[in-house]
Length: 222
Ligand SMILES: *Cc1c(COP(=O)(O)O)cnc(C)c1O
Image (cartoon, rainbow, N blue to C red):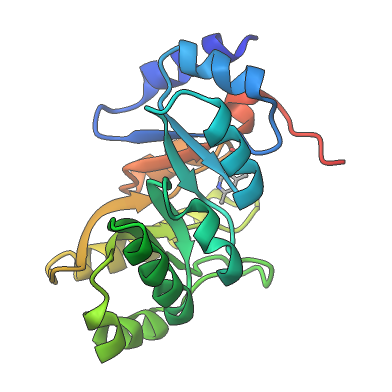
């Protein structure tokens, strides 16, 4: 199957209000160009250097989403162009994003990553950390970031019930916090679901899915 066929088939199955982030990490420019030619405009990467190389070489109407865990000292490289940062998991990182956004005279949209999986390997905040951040005076003073949603990754397992429960925990938190709105906090995006679990994620209320291998094929890590 070709990338464009995979994309078209996938998109035909998605509800209109669900945005598709095509996760192109490790894939060559030619693969991204093929997806672009098939109409895809949102791409997700997990390494800042790789995303910046691709941003330089591809059309400028692409929205670049950083979906991976971020090192604070690299935020400056993506601050001029990144559209959405999915995996923000500390006040320290928010502070750096705010600083770099200010330098570029723009507001950077962020999602806060919640830890919903039972696996130790997954990053993210727990609900009490999240509330602590939102209530802090430091957060309230950030003028160059906007938290527009939440992101989460379910446990990698065949147990659908477990995955569903984890997605629903995030959806519940999202619904609770949706009523709270300030100048730098307004929840609209719920980023959950990947190639293996996006139908379930959508069923559980996701409106942004991050799909890689189901579009571009399996990844080779060298
Ligand atoms: C790689 C990655 C994806 C996409 O994974 P696939 O299983 O290939 O769809 C989604 N989200 C994050 C955070 C990722 O790192």
